[in-house]
Amino acid sequence: MTQAKQYWWQNAVVYQIYPRSFQDSNNDGIGDIKGIISRLDYIKKLGADIIWLNPMYKSPNVDNGYDISDYRAIHPDFGSLDDFKELLAQAHKLGLKIMMDLVVNHSSDENKWFEESRKGPENPYRDYYIWRDPVDGHEPTNWGSYFSGSAWKFDETSDQYYLHLFATKQPDLNWENPKLRHSVYDIMNWWADMGIDGFRMDVINLISKPAEYKDGKLADGERYADVEPIVANGHRENEFLQEMHQNVMAKHDLVTVGEAPGSSVKDAEKYANLDETELNMVFQFEHVSLDGNPKAAFGKWDDRHVTLNEVRTSLSKWQTNLGGKAWNSLYWNNHDQPRAVSRFGNDGPKYRVKSAKMLATLLHFLQGTPYVYEGEEIGMTNAHFKQLADYQDLETHNIYKQLVTDDKLIDSATMMKYIEFHSRDNARTPMQWDDSENAGFSNHQPWLKVNQNYSEINVKQALADPDSVFYYYQKLIKLRHELPVITDGKYELLPGNDQDKDVYVYIRKNADTTLFVIVNFTEKQLTRKYDLPDKKHLLISNYDDDLTAQLRPYEAKVYQF
Ligand code: NOJ
Image (cartoon, rainbow, N blue to C red; front, top):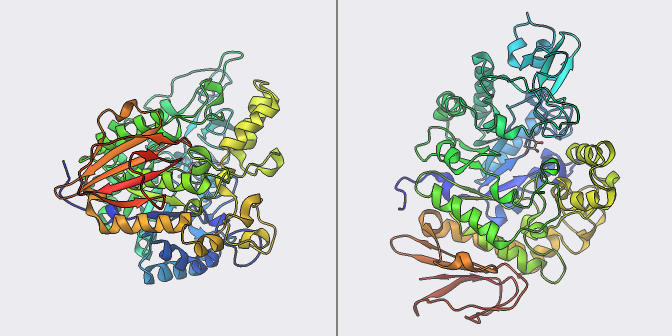
């Protein structure tokens, strides 16, 4: 079934910018708004339609801006509100739309709401956050934080615990309180009135907390409970999103994507339903959670490369189930995930370019809105830092302390391998613009080390090479804009392909066009024969010629008929 109504964001491509790491204009080692403005032409050249900016609000930066102390101010590291307005104007002039990050599951503890709230139970802001009495002198529940340790912190001033699903300096907002909800809508409308074009909503499926906080006191030696299954997709989630829609999205032409860890296809069908009553799409986590550690205490920390079977089963499930009902967002990586080519492809010199193009082909012909994370379009790789001191991310340091130092569950060398594979800093190293010192990102030592491979992998090199990953992405984006079948065609896995552990083949089809997408996920030379009409034409490939039944390492090709 192809869907009838089309929305402008359905054939759009989003380019994600991590502002701290994109371009530094004032040489303090931190990327900034003026730096972004100076690179808008580059994004335009790539062909993207929308820019998603990770948080740039005022923040003490314990979690790089995901701890907001003022929702209406820009952090001075990035510039001023006037700079932001200038960015908006310049982007709009080029036909680029701007999507802001909205972080309203939690704020910073330095936000004035929390500073008021912690003054005590009588304060009008007390119920903006989630406070609970101790139970027998312990935390109210056994919930663990995403960033290690308990999800509760005792506050001496009022003798109560507050909930923080992330860092202790990121207290959770209380969405049960209508005043808080309307304060959030006011903030959203304030930015929308300024002219922004959308919101990416941080962990938005965690805002509706359980009706009851059952006492799950930790027994001696017991670990804190994985909080996601307890809090994600709560009983009032759809109601809150619908209310937000009525109060904000219905009043502006905005594109919205909700980050939704732990959401199932059924959850996403509602959040991202095509009637536009909640959000436009969600970031689901299934395909980026397949390579986690089988031992619960380790969570995502492992260095296993996922198999094609696992990836295909997951992607296919989402394509098939959301098709015609809701909208997928398509991504391999972002600021929280390792670099795509290192994780799913092959980042060695021989196959980096081929496998980066293969992954791009696989993703960009699926149904949904693709997200390109800064540097992905030139095949940037994981950082491969060997020393813990080279990492800045609090999640990485907290997990090392927990698993190696405190709980002694793993030796340091093995943990460092896991960190090298999975740390969020892999994606956060400065953008590699050229082969000058600090990769053209800054003249000052950057806040996080530059990836050592910057002299070979950089934008200058990519733009000078007609066969680069950059121009391949440019072509994919152009095809999406020009060929309706990429947006509206039905997805179908080639019958029998689910048995093939090396090659992924799927079909996209609308009333007048069929696309046949073939990707060799391995470095092996393979032979595969598919029954294809004579009247087909090769739409795109990452090799210069077509050996029909032969598939070379990481070969990707798409036929149109
Ligand atoms: C998800 C964000 O993408 C991540 O970077 C952040 O640490 C957490 N949410 C908490 O805000």
